[in-house]
Length: 456
Image (cartoon, rainbow, N blue to C red; front, side, top):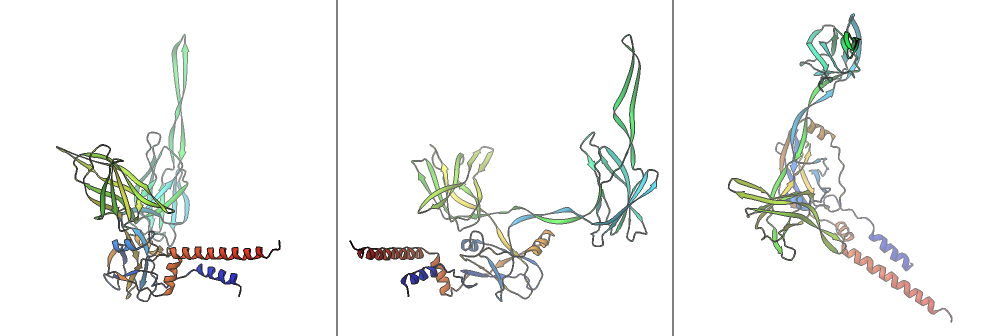
């Protein structure tokens, strides 16, 4: 067999993707403690420091599996406070008609669609300005027997005087499917803003003055009628911040640059800032937060946040601000640089990390147990169908938080995983370089032999 062909086959084999088995692809797993097994509930698994320390930055390696190894969809979300608001949702109108009841009165009849929600209000949409109309709203369950829901409703627009308008008519609780909007007088008398003035003068003196003001009728022109109902929606507010004391930090002084350096180790928490505990009473120092960034074989420090640390404690004044914020990061090492100028260094007594919190929300099935797997290295972020979970959250269903059992190391089973690690290791690079050098030397040797056989 041709030696070139064999060599190329060996090189190609090194680039064949290797996939580990589902379980052995993770380093750790933990059981999920179900508070009430068999009960329908929205369950939330709150991520803790052990999961942050072992999981990937994008959490792509988190998997929920039941006792049969079946993957269970989940929704990953930041832990945030929630508020319930009332939002208007349309109730679909199936048909509408108009009927005159007098020389200047009309009745508009509306019929809701069969699947439309009960109506909490009506909106009369018109492009007119500067008006006021009185309405009466009647309702019926079958379109035959009618009763009055609102006797004296008013829609108005006073924009000539002030930006004040109302086109909504709130209705009392009802389950009716037919509505009548009765407008006893669809036109109103309006006087023109301009006045026609005629003056009669004699020898420069006004002898007679006539004023005429045009009067016209403005009819109500309805462009659209909307029926709506109020729906309670639960919306997330700002993410909650959690404080974690970070005991692993070291303070050093750079006398040449007149700065204090605080090097902080972080167990890969999703940090958004630091809070420094400073024993000094009065100070004001600018500060930067930096992270190490690798560029080839070299490393440099990159600034991700900056701020002013200050405190004033004097008589009745007690004010301090020692927070430094930055966009969420999950680095293992940080450095805070304090600019001392010609001032003595500050006494740093402690450092706390301000962190976002994350949780997995899922719908457990009855009579099933679950485990959380994490700590993988080469996983694609899963795409789950979470529409039902989001709908339940939007409707305000409560979330029940649960706890996790002790962490267990997943048994690593196979050469596949070892080969996978080899493909992402420095050893592979060394092997490749060695093979390339061998191919180059062999090629030069063959060229040299050919040259030696060329006659002079």
